[in-house]
Length: 204
Image (cartoon, rainbow, N blue to C red; front, side, top):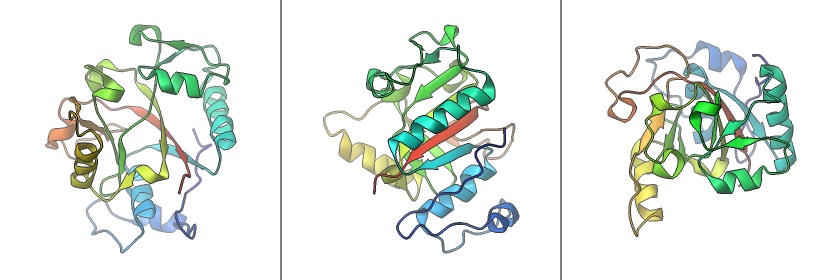
């Protein structure tokens, strides 16, 4: 599972050094870093795997690499967002609307939370399902404009975006490997560890 070691940057594309990512302690205070670099550090600590992409062509290539690496070429992707299915309709992927028929959940998200490296989702991505009802493997397609500093900012953005009615089932994907950390986080209560890939498209 070593394909995706690239780090992404925003603005001037300043990269985070490998040493910085590997040596920052879990409980050490955040460095004065740009929001994208801060997300990178925490996301990798959580056990997530991602690839930063400059174009949709690179997203397609990364997705093919993920499928080849895991031998998922003939495995259908469980999708609950029809727009996502349409966007990736040329990728020679079969899709299913039944979680029981797939070991891969393919989804978008609302925001990427820099403070703790989590991924904020809601009923528009999950419908009424709980995290432990989803397949163990998750592939998230997101863009750099979805980065926010903390959960509070993410929730405010959701409230502003969906003024006609705030979506339900708001939660975070955070535990990408077995861990007891943040067990008291109300937004991840009842969640289960997921093997997660993040395809991040630059759109700023």
